[in-house]
Amino acid sequence: ETGVTQTPRHLVMGMTNKKSLKCEQHLGHNAMYWYKQSAKKPLELMFVYSLEERVENNSVPSRFSPECPNSSHLFLHLHTLQPEDSALYLCASSQDIGSNSNYGYTFGSGTRLTVV
Amino acid sequence: AQSVAQPEDQVNVAEGNPLTVKCTYSVSGNPYLFWYVQYPNRGLQFLLKYITGDNLVKGSYGFEAEFNKSQTSFHLKKPSALVSDSALYFCAVRPPYGGSYIPTFGRGTSLIVHP
Image (cartoon, rainbow over all chains, first blue to last red; front, top):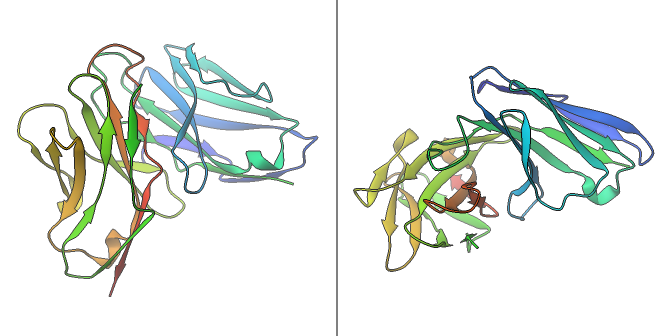
């Protein structure tokens, strides 16, 4: 384990379902991220939280809704998804964002999402 | 805007041979550069980074990368490949100042090491 835990590991959901992905880190990091990984595409940044405040939202459809209740937990709420949303969703954390963030990120193992 | 190009979808190499995984970048100012590795069913793991100093950076598992400013490249290398090095490799870049400081990742290169 890397210190970033994601659950569930696999999720199959229908287009009308509502589900949530969970990410947890106990590394004392202040920044957390959601990424979408699709085959042969660049890793796509979705959301960034710093000290529990959202600092970046890269034009992600509203059917994806993030929540960061505290600095250790990050959720991604899903509803009325489309088949093209099927992908590996990765959570990551880092000490900080900003000019001192020259350290690497710590990633979770991801949630493999399939929308049917 | 910053960008990363990994021109090869896949690199094949025989075990024991040297390997190179290519990365070129575009960013304002002197870049911060990173390599990550992803094994099957796992998240990305940090391998190495270039911030400043020596152009040859050494990282985990015997990997190294060479920063070439004139060619805007940061190729990943290893003198002798192992079958266990087979994985997906990601290059990332971020500017040293300005913007959101968040790295931009490439699309990944699949490295396959044959016994």
